[in-house]
Structures are given as C-alpha cells and as structure tokens.
Length: 306
Ligand SMILES: Cc1cc2nc3c(=O)[nH]c(=O)nc-3n(C[C@H](O)[C@H](O)[C@H](O)COP(=O)(O)OP(=O)(O)OC[C@H]3O[C@@H](n4cnc5c(N)ncnc54)[C@H](O)[C@@H]3O)c2cc1C
Image (cartoon, rainbow, N blue to C red; front, side):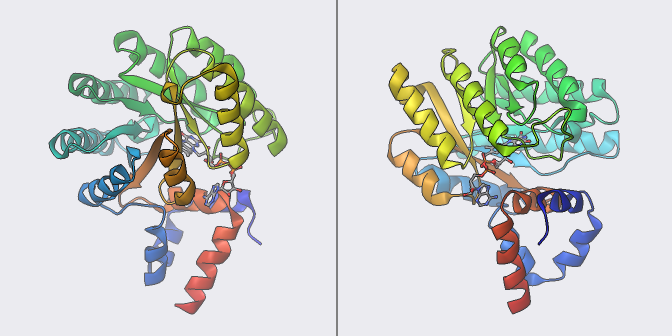
C-alpha cells in the first residue's frame, strides 16, 4: 500500500502527471477534487455551491513557480478571478500561495506580487487568504503576511496555521495580537519530527487547543477540516461558550465530504468550500490521495477498469 509520505513524495514529481494523464479515467477522477482547468469551470462549480448555501474560496493551482514571469502570470490570473467574482456576483474570496508568487525565487518579489492582489481585493471589498505551505517557508509566510496586515485591514487579508506544527499555538497567540483572521487546518506536507508532531493524536489535540483559542478571540476565523471529531468539538465548544454560528466559518475542500458540507450549511453554519482549478492539478491531487489512502484504491480500481 502506498503510504502518506510516498504519495506526498510522488506529488512533487510532475513527470508522473504526464504518464497518469494518458488514462482518460484519471482525468475524470481528478475532477472530483479539482473544479476544472479554467476560471469559467471554477465559476460554474462555485455557482452550484452557492446554490447549496456554501460560499467558496478560489485557488488557482500552481505552486513553486520557476521564474518571475511565471509569478507575474499568476498575479494576472488572480486579478482576473477577482474581477470575475464581481462580474458574476458569486460568493467567493480567494486563496493564494506565496510560492506561486515567487517566494522561493525572492521573498520581496512574492511580497510585492501578493500586495497587488490584496490591494485589488481590498478595493473590491473582497478577502485574500494566504495559504500555509511547507515548514521551510512558515516564518517567511508569516513575515510577509504581517507586512500586508500592517497596511491592509482585518477583513482584507488573513493567514493559515497548521496544527501539526509544534510552533502553531504560539504563532496563533502572536497573530491574534494584530489581530488577524486565521484558518486553522491540520497541515498537508511531510515534516520532520523536530518541527511537527509525528503522532496524529497530538496534531488533533493541538487543533482543538488552537480552535478554542481562535473562537474565544472574538475575531472571525476559519475552521478547516473534514474530521467529524474536530467539527463536533468546535460545535460543542461554541455552544458551551455561547459563541454564535455567525462568529466563525467551517471550511472544506472541493469534493471532500460533500454530504457534510451540505449538512452543516443546512444546520445554519457558515460553510466555505476551497475550490481549486487550473492546469497544474497534479501535486494538489496527490496530496488529497495522501490524506485518505482509501482514495488510492478508488483511483487504482477505476484505472484498472478503464
Ligand atoms: C479549506 C481548507 C484549506 C486548507 N488549506 C491548507 C493550507 O493552507 N495548508 C496546508 O498545509 N493544508 C491545508 N489544508 C489541508 C489540511 O491541512 C489537511 O491536509 C486536510 O484538510 C485533511 O485533514 P482533515 O482535517 O480533514 O483531517 P484528517 O484527519 O486528514 O481526516 C479526517 C477525516 O476526514 C475525511 N477526509 C479527509 N481528507 C479526505 C480526502 N482527501 N478525501 C476523502 N475524505 C477525506 C475522512 O473521513 C477522514 O477520516 C486545507 C484544508 C481545507 C479543508
């Protein structure tokens, strides 16, 4: 059986995508987790989500760009997304990755590129979420976020923290002083035990600690998980502390636990779905398989059948 770390390793080898893409069925399967390759396809997916009572966050898939020109193309894409959100009236904000804007080439370039997007979103009354990537760029990401937050408002730009990192509770406390809107998730990368809890139990316990800190802060945060245990703990804590349903939002990934997404929206919770689209779907797709080995069997079975 392919392990989580093997799948995350494979996610960094785009060459395999070429091989996999030969199977028509593989592409069909990816559409379960990826809303398509174009903005139009993502807009159509978001319209459906909106009709089910869910809001969305656009994610143009492209990590670790190789040149400043590629980073600039990402900026153009996001400006286009923000314009399309306004034109179509869909309920969506945007999520960005700083490596997409050149973080690994030059942090200053990534800051300048991200700033263009946040300025445009702020002008339009929209919101930019800065995703969190591997631990090699955690501090850089927080530093750039703080610069953006110093210039723009609480409701213009937010950040993500990962509960598998040992440092996260302290980071949350620091960021709440700004204050900042935070999305808490478990974390999706391969990390060494020095920086991340090797044991899932500790990641989950930390998730609950951070969730409680966030909900008690009076700031609107995102509780991103498909884990019923984390969701129940959030609802239970909110009820116990008299925190209203409109004081936070749940967030899930496109195509994952759609039943639960609809149920929470029906129960009156704010539910935001992260909607990835674009040609560079391969690493994202492989990380989703890594999260749930049962999905690997699902893919393999269908490939064999096809
Ligand atoms: C909105 C959103 C934004 C995110 N942003 C980031 C980010 O910026 N940085 C980052 O590192 N990570 C991010 N992630 C990913 C996150 O870190 C986890 O890898 C992912 O959410 C799986 O963790 P979980 O909380 O769902 O719990 P897990 O413990 O992984 O899973 C709990 C249960 O959820 C269900 N489930 C989980 N994943 C899947 C799947 N792929 N397919 C089917 N069922 C599944 C299963 O029933 C599973 O038993 C984000 C996740 C969400 C929902």
